[in-house]
Length: 469
Image (cartoon, rainbow, N blue to C red; front, side, top):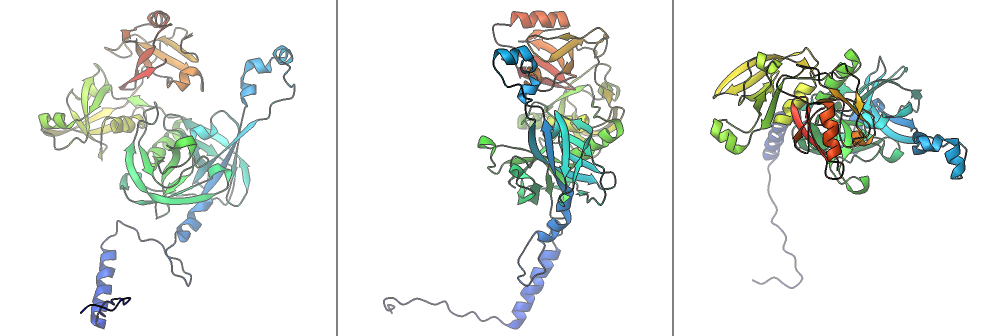
């Protein structure tokens, strides 16, 4: 029968017995217990009973601080502007230029000793660094050490009654895990955003190469740099450091340095005052699907050794070309960049346990990390074509089978620095022309003065190409 116009069909009532409701509640309770890897959202103790992150944040936010940095202005940095004659000639004001201020974030890592970690780019070139706590106490910070390669810096403040964050294990993260970002975006004050882990092991954002970023859609905006990325247990699993977005704004693509990398860097800074990177003496490549099939490998996970330097730690340990490195100290290696990160964070003299596959068989090797090659004792020379860098001849026999010119120093923020050249780089070629000495380098640069200029470098165990122009 056709229903009358304007009538609404009502669903038939569902009859549910009290026993069925009880069984369903028991089932749901068992399901929650069976998922220990997924922490439940904390709930408020108010009468509303709605899900909230407030209990976690009340415990962790006192450990996230504001970093205020005073740096020199561009006028102060330029020697021409400091020249009185130049100022009078161009009728420039005589008063001193005001110092520039920038704002970032930091995380208290040790409450007893007052250690605060932040990003290197937040405090570089700073004349003064002031740490402001959540309770509005302010302290002038002392710089303990930095590592530009991972964008990490360690500060120290003389303060009592501090709250530190517990360090979590970023290696246990999975894509889809809930995370919370805490920082000081746009200088507004402490701000909290939440999201999930969007990806792991991100790299290629900078020329440094020591990158293994956690990607998250939790909003990370200017001023969040150096702030905390935490899990729902309130553990620090990353230091917020970068974003990809138009005009510097957030579009849901933020990056954090994983806590495992942060811990390795801080351990070396506290031990040596710096990060002392070494090398294996072996270069590696990623494993393609075709290569995995030809070698009978179970997957593309790992890094395949393409060359082993004669006399290197890798050769002494028995590592050979076409070996596939699968683990370092028991932790899996995803690709060649992951291998570089793991080796680059190990102190010189440390012994690594490498798990590898050779001809289908699983083997182990112990490799002692060696220091990077050194320049000769001869005086270093400036490179006019790459302003800010000084170079010197490589010591004879420093790297058997490899010839080149060692970069001994690079002035921070100079043209060479901004192009990605770093101290310790070994220049082996200019526009595909091999260079073995400073004189050959200068001649090759002069010959390329009017055209393109591309440098071929070796950084640690890896080849890097940098285009200057």
